[in-house]
Image 1: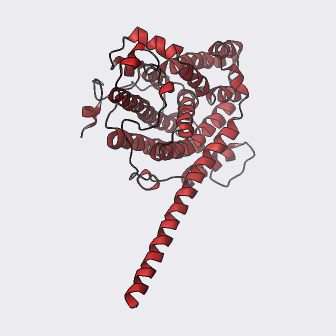
Image 2 (image 1 turned 90 degrees about the horizontal axis):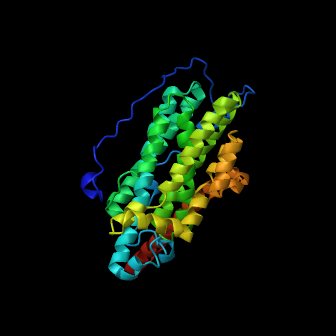
Image 3 (image 1 turned 180 degrees about the horizontal axis):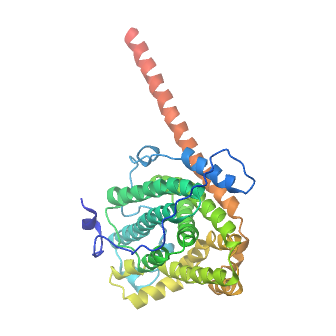
Length: 377
């Protein structure tokens, strides 16, 4: 079935064209894995090696035979739905509530899908524009990672939910701003720090709360890749931003402030409630008053704020913006620990799955031996 037939509303032109700016850069100074020069660039080459070692096939690593109830794909509790407890919720039948869960999961994973395509394009832009060859090498592995993620989220939406939502206006706006900027570091800042950082937090919250095995697998394995991507952005930008003037740093802080507000306002799912006959103004009010969504919005910045601080964007105006958003204290979060946990969770899922498959093989062998013995008697 064509994707367009699965969209809840017309997404418009099938191609969104963003005019490209900036220069393609070639680098004649080459470094290679294992080479040491004392400048710290060997860290990036080690990450490139890890990016190669950690490639995987979404068709094989994920168990697509697992069933998903499209009307409860994530095990979403009633209390987490912004319209819960309102006059509209009181009128919903059980069928309506199941349909709403389907739409909410479709909306969330559709934004993940669109974000991953954006990440793939941004990573390709980094390959083209970043000055250093070692950064180009790593970015090339990330292009493949993002292609895999887009493939996986697309398959989940097609096969397990059967519904897609168009890209959210705020996400599209931030992607457009990121790609239209001619400065080579802006795809790093817009995608690796803001969009990827926020996506990681969203993935993690669902991964850690869902009791459904297939979405848990998908999110855990995607997050294992994303941990490398954020590390890449931190390395590259931390070094580069040390060289910038105060005025140049302030320009990038303004971009971060605007992007954070866009991302915060993206996560309301208002367009879902509108599809259920709830006026936009009321839907926005319910989303703003929801205690669950307020906590969710705060946690979403758990990856962004410490990363922004780490790369050296921590001026007074940016700090005040985070105070106003209620997320300033997250600047002290241990980002390295969060990323290590993402790696461990994915590896633990693999170990559990391999152990289960081994038990099945042992049981099959045991049954075959018993059958053979029975025939011999």
